[in-house]
Image (cartoon, rainbow, N blue to C red; front, side):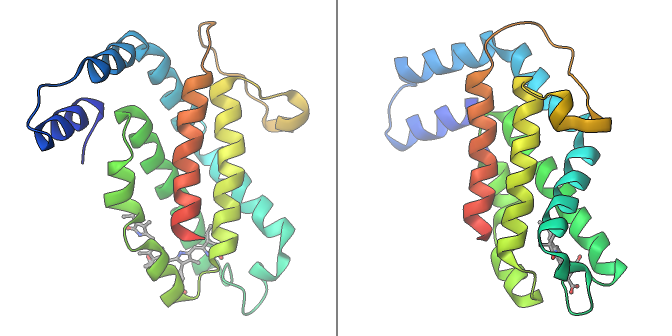
Length: 184
Ligand SMILES: CCC1=C(C)/C(=C/C2=NC(=C\c3[nH]c(/C=C4\NC(=O)[C@H](C)[C@H]4CC)c(C)c3CCC(=O)O)/C(CCC(=O)O)=C2C)NC1=O
C-alpha cells in the first residue's frame, strides 16, 4: 500500500532518479492543502452509514426484484451482506482519499472483487449503480453542494472552511469511478 509520498519514492527509484521537481511540487500541494483533505475524508466518514443506506435503498427502488425471492438482496442475510459491502467499499475509498493514492483501494478491496461477485451471483451492474449513488452523495458532501431538496429529512451541511475543494471532489470521484470500472 502506497501514499502520495511513498508513491513518489517508488516511482523515482524505478527510474534510479532523485524525486523530481514535479513530484515535489505535487507533494507541497498535498501538504499545503492537508486540512482540506482531512475535511473531505471527514465528510465521507461522518456520513458513511447515511451514504451507504441511501445508495442501497436507491439501487433497490430502481430494481425491486433485488429484494424478492431470487434477488441478490433477498433474504435478510444477503441484504446485510450488501450493506456491509457498501460500508467496506466506502471505507477503502476514504483511505485512498486520505493517502492521496488508490493502491490501498486496489490491493485490499478491489483485487478479485468482480470474480467474487460473479461466483456468488451478485449482480455487478447493480453494485456499480449503488457505488454511483454513493459517489453522488459523497462528492456533494465534500463539495458542499448538498441541498435540502436533495438531502430531504437527512439533510446535513458539513461545517468546513471556505475554499475551493474542486480538486478533492474530482479526486474522490475518481476513486468511486475506479470501483465502478473494477466491478462492472
Ligand atoms: C476486503 C474487503 C472485502 C470485500 C470487498 C468483500 C466482499 C464480499 N462480498 C461478499 C458477498 C456478498 N455481497 C453482496 C452484495 C450485493 N448484493 C447485491 O444485490 C448488491 C448489488 C450488492 C450490495 C451493493 C451480497 C448479497 C453478498 C452475499 C452473497 C451470497 O452469499 O449469496 C463476499 C462473500 C463472503 C461473504 O458473504 O461475506 C465477499 C468476500 N469482503 C471483504 O472482506
